[in-house]
Image 1 (cartoon, rainbow, N blue to C red):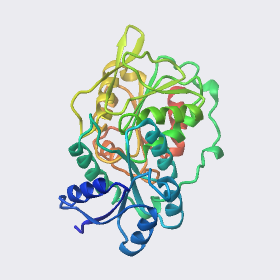
Image 2: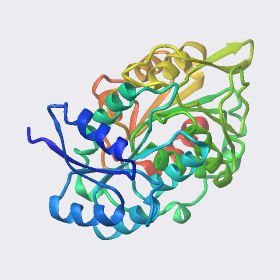
Image 3: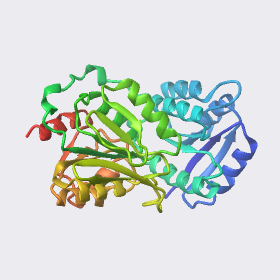
Image 4: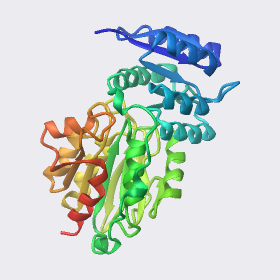
Amino acid sequence: MNKIKVLVVDDSAMVRKMLSIELSKSEHIVVVDTAIDPYFARDKIVSLKPDVVLLDIEMPRMDGLTFLRKLLKYYPIRVIVVSSLAEKGGDVALKALEYGALEVVAKPSVSYSVTDMIEQLKEKIIAVSKIPNWKIGIKENKINNLVKPNKKSLIRTTNKVIAIGASTGGTEALREILERIPANSPPIIIVQHMPAHFTKSFAKRLNDLCEIEVKEAEDMEILSPGKALIAPGNMHMELNRSGAVYYVKLNQGSTVYHQRPSVEILFDSVAKYAGRNSIGVILTGMGKDGASGLLHMKNEGAYTIAQDEKSCVVFGMPKEAIEIGAVAKVVSLNHIVDDIINNLSK
């Protein structure tokens, strides 16, 4: 296979050198050049035609967000944002995903080593390099054109739990789904592959947009109707139960398919403690995290949904789940909420 051509855009000479050396060790990747800021990057993108751009978002002369919007408007290309773990960095990185960046990776910190970062970055570069050209670029927000479901249809579903797993492309898919969920919905628990701190910013952003409450989960937090809990970055989240009360437990166990949080762990726990009273949804994302867990849910009587290929940014996780027979129905993104509500109303 031809090597994936990568351009590194970062104002730190140390970061540019580190990424160039480490990524080029991969047999699938070659760093064709680096750029100190967006102005240099613009010229190098045109001349070198990289497959993937790694973009810092805090740079001199032109910030990364401004550059990203201009770039994707006139020259759609696969962009992975490489950002600090600071909360401010998380807010800006979310904007980058809204503007069309495909992934976000955290820069190394005390709890997140260079080795961890490079391994994740290699996987993400390979995954996004396979995304078709027509799925790249600034996405129009079509959610305002969709009709909100009938709120009364969910009144009798308080014993249900909705579990959702997503990865690449999932931040926007989750936004579209949660913006349409009525305020009296059953509890929702979510794993989205994101670094620590970014999930808190993501939850706050969704909370501002949705009728339901959306927040980053806390250990031993009780589930309640009209609330969605998002697993914190770098923490697994499991459903548990005490009598009629559902709650979540967080832990930093071993990664599953190189992921923490893992969709697999969430879905397995939902199968165990909610069974037929649950709905499982697997959304866009690379790899196969969650496929076996969704099958476990289905075998315990849960209703299971997979996002269809056309509406996925990466048809990895849903495809794996479909192939092993874990999915009851394959649904386009803009019909997933309707399908959930139809099932809850039965």
